Image (cartoon, rainbow, N blue to C red):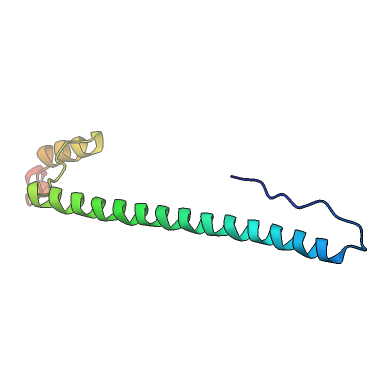
Length: 98
């Protein structure tokens, strides 16, 4: 990033020189704004391209591989399955104990 350099002040009597100095500084600032706008447009285009590539890659992987349900057991999942095995649903456990 370039630095903004203001021209050194001149004696108050030379108004034309001060105006030219301010115009030069303003032109320099304007040029820097234009450069920054161009860089911003390039970055915006890169972001748009990356978003498009991401959506294409997500779309193509979804077509190639259907979503798979994660059937790995967690500790709690294993305990629930063990409980369901030991105490099966649908049977009346109170009738067999009495």
